Length: 414
Picture 1 (cartoon, helix red, strand yellow):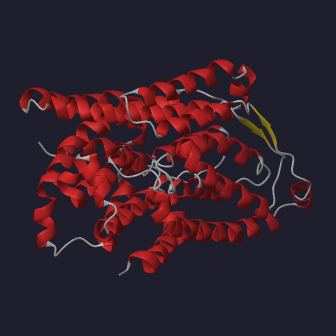
Picture 2 (cartoon, rainbow, N blue to C red):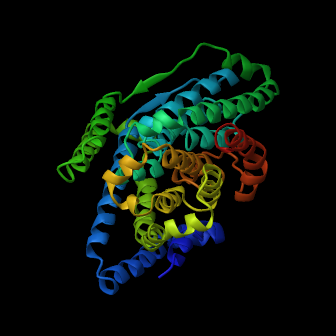
Picture 3 (cartoon, one colour):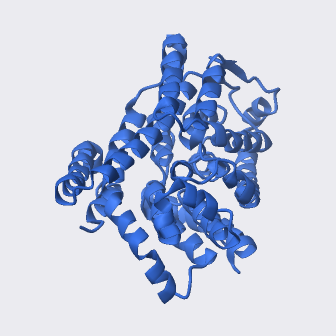
């Protein structure tokens, strides 16, 4: 059995976005069921299925709990911002993405971001927000981006990512913020004088629902609990429930909070987790053979390989596929993988995979889950956003590609 079902789920939004929006639950669940039946009744791999089910529950509980708790915090901002204030806000979002996840940070900050630029909001505000907050910013912790959390579940130590990926994070965020400032400064100078006067008035940030910070702390502590089984997930669910029932209704209404985004992610990832089993198993069993044929893997190969596929597929299964290809059977044993990441050879490969999956996920709307969520919210608020091809041609190629080349030249070329 090959990876055709996984490919179908990943490319569905690209082939026919309108039909996919109506029928994705049926398609994702049906394709996942095909793989599941094959593993249960054809291969009798019950233990393998249970292991994947545990990973799925852990993954979706973390994403969902962060989504619910961040939805209980409302930020009030003034009606306009200067380019420098916008840069500070994006930098704050990049840092928060590592504690709230790119999904949680995006859902918390996208509406204030639109409000604080409402008199001159345009496509570059939305796309740079996706680049910085929804993707590149979440590269420092397993909480930050779904691929890194899956690596943590596989056995990658929690703080290993921050220790080894921070130079790429600083470089990527620095380049993107510099580019944004240049573009936003030009936009700002074209705005009417009255708009600029509002922007230059003192900041007026106000926060409501700050009791949810305590629930966020519970989730962060729970991440480090691995035994006994499902205690981590139970604590996260309890924090989400506590946030939901204690947050005032008017705060949720002000945030236009609904469960639809996380419902979509949960359904899609049921299909993704099921259909990626054959691809991951094949890679684990054949990694050594192909490594010998290619003369050994290199960080540059995995940076561009994992990155390119993350641009057109979801970056979470792409990360796992390359992790399996590089680690072989070690990818299925947390203790072995935790030991492997301490070696320079494998560690350099994993850094390349991690950075490639996270950074390149920003290249298209389908590269990472929050990208589509941000676009949907912007469209709902009548903000002009680029089409799929417009996104790639107007922003990915002239903005993301130079940054990705700089990161490659500095860290992965050799």
